[in-house]
Amino acid sequence: MRVEIWSDIACPWCYVGKARFEKALAGFAHRDGVEVVHRSFELDPDRAKDDVQPVLTMLTAKYGMSEAQARAGEDNLGAQAAAEGLDYRTRGRDHGNTFDMHRLLHLAKERGRQSELLDALYRANFAEERSVFAEGDERLAELAVAAGLDADEARGVLADPAAYADEVRADEREAARLGAGGVPFFVLDRKYGVSGAQPAEVFAQALAQAWDEHQPLTLLQDGDGGGDGGADVCGPDGCAVPRS
Amino acid sequence: MRVEIWSDIACPWCYVGKARFEKALAGFAHRDGVEVVHRSFELDPDRAKDDVQPVLTMLTAKYGMSEAQARAGEDNLGAQAAAEGLDYRTRGRDHGNTFDMHRLLHLAKERGRQSELLDALYRANFAEERSVFAEGDERLAELAVAAGLDADEARGVLADPAAYADEVRADEREAARLGAGGVPFFVLDRKYGVSGAQPAEVFAQALAQAWDEHQPLTLLQDGDGGGDGGADVCGPDGCAVPRS
Image (cartoon, rainbow over all chains, first blue to last red; front, side, top):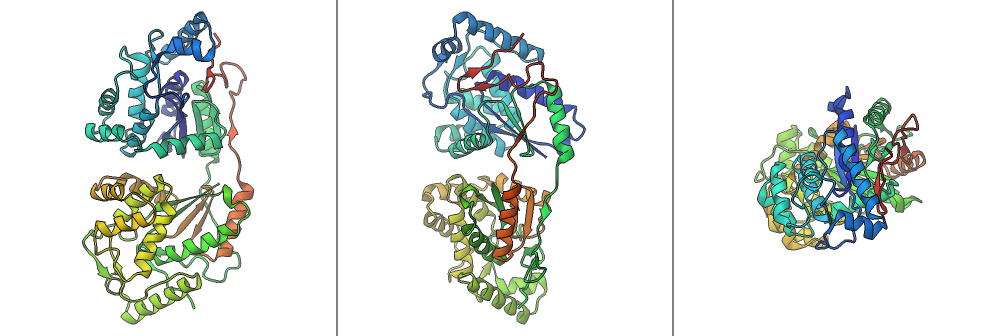
């Protein structure tokens, strides 16, 4: 069974939601039969790559919050993160464009290190003093290496703006098709959706329900039983010879 | 709705089956709502890259057919291909390893040219005088360009054996998980499977059935209606503020 999780590195609820989902998955009896894929979603896709702002400035400027509201929101998020055992720096973080990080996550997916890189990016963004936005590609390459990727390969992807760009956009189109207007957004077996950083118990229930209802493929046959139905196939032992 | 088609360039029934499926799709009322993805399957994954053989030699050596049987099989395949308007060279074709072609098809997928490249590879393998196996990377790069890809990008992928290798293997693992022992293998909406180059009418029926039964995602909610159910999400307009 496959679980797809749409998220953005700049999304605090995604950081918290990943931990909650993984807590549920760790307690799920069939966890070895669950494949998790992380998919791209940008909260702020139109922001220029070099437009980096303190989070509090962004919250007051873009969303019209008062500074007190913005600070209170960050404090609350910090408390929710702490409850999941996650570090969260409630003051002084930056906000910026995450497109290159998503491209790098697609490389990491191919190399089987996607969850590790996403953890590293979240930690770098939400918990560490250094900005993950302001130091350029070398900082991202360093995080990629920490997640187990090859440094030169990561640098190559970062230096080529076309690398995995289509895959990021394809994920985002898919999110729109599935009706995900915000993140985190969890899709189980393409059947059930869970929106938001729900409590671990909600994810546990969703995993159990989707697992119970998971259906193998139904093979359709040539309805009339005649023709070449089912026969016109090539396998490791050769190709079927057509009946004349 | 998504249709995934597992196939190999060295599989004559895949060549015929693609044409039959596309005939059904062209006549399907909701064709604009159907996304087609081609996935990798190698009929002969253990064959060395430089081990190129005439098809008739391979059929007699590997599958123990008599030369007369092998020739008759090829003649029959040629007739089936012709019935779909496809050229098919029944004598003198080569057989070889298709891994690099599958890697290239994954690049083409990212660039939105996958179906075009698969058509070009099929044509080159089944219809043209020149061997698609014996002339090395430059021949494949040429076909990639004919399908609308960038020559240098295609050469780069061909020169790097790791490029898209994991994606080819992931497709092959997925085929095994779905129970596909041979190709072509068509999967509609991850719900229905169609094995083999069935008549176009079978594909038309399968498309209609899968379309009619296609379900949008069911959104699961926090069961007790309390907690932070549904609220802990970030969207283009900001992040929800946790209720305390």
